[in-house]
Image 1 (cartoon, rainbow, N blue to C red):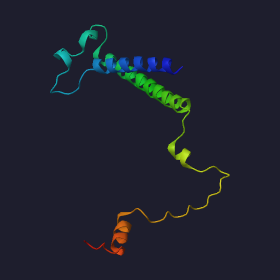
Image 2 (spheres, one colour):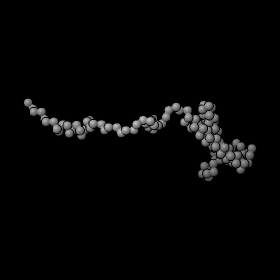
Image 3 (spheres, rainbow, N blue to C red):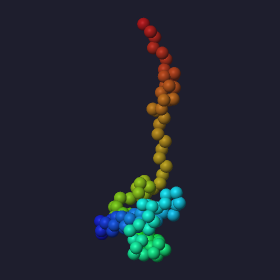
Length: 125
């Protein structure tokens, strides 16, 4: 199921990129792609109806892209058998939660320095 949804998602992505690239640029400096205005579809439709069709197609494809993205995220969350690290670190509900005893302070740098100061220096021979 997930592989089929990924293929559909990729087809929507490619179509969305294509439809966006077909739209005419409104910036005056760039002048649109090719400088000819409407492109290859200009003889088929007027400029206004072409813009409406491409805008609607873009909106539909964007909605489909959003929906397939959500479905893929839901499927990925349900398919993974692993749990969150936070869930694994929590103690079981029936387990006693007694605080652990503090570890003896032997091993820190300051403790080792204190031990060296307390030992008498060995006489040099």
